[in-house]
Image (cartoon, rainbow, N blue to C red; front, side):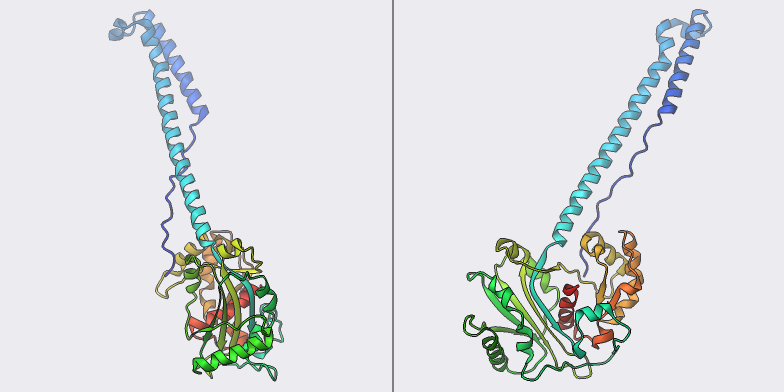
Length: 355
């Protein structure tokens, strides 16, 4: 479900009084006053003769002064209301933007896709790149390497910057049906092979599904820790393709407190239900997640997202977004079918982060 946000209503900017019209009205009031003065002096005003000459002659100008004061008050009141509502809306927008701008800091990321497809080659999409829509493709690792050793490579520098007192955990998101003891043993062996005994192998938390909305849950949780998420998707057969990914994550406040270098961010995500009005959902997202409109590449796990591009483009135009079909890239076109939604989005994350 998309974010529930009620946008502030701002009254229209009031029309400024016309100086020329009011000056003309003033001139008419003065001329009328002179005529009344002459008529009163010559006894031509009938019942108005009983009133003082200066009261009768000055009444048009006095009435003009009352009207212009009333018009000025109404204008200033409407302008103050408009300014107040604008300031409140701007403050609310800033609060929402700050809220949506919370993120998970990505200290390390890696993805391994079928056919040696790299994020750079995928985004560039050269003409000779083989497409594989609706196919389940496999990953062939080099001899002597397994899924754990492949994902742990390059993690050294990111782990070195972690403080000793900062809790560190490893989560394995897998579609394998192997016993947990076997997975833990294989991971520990790869860990020792890569890091030796300088860093003790942590225990694995093994999951079969993990929604991408867990990013938001982690952002909201005031926990000081760092998590290494390993995605192991190799049992899809003809249903979906293989994918391996590694993400070293922590919340933005932890990264700030411990001054952890990070090359990318996972911003607070917004989920969309199939039954929702996509135009309204995209408008809410783009007006709140203001950084999203600045991207020059749109990535998706499946080609089905191409069907809603026109809706997204229509919403983006309201916020000066000008994307073109050439800027859209769907992982399924070159890496084969994506995995289940509660696991398939995670391999896409390092591809997005690379860009």
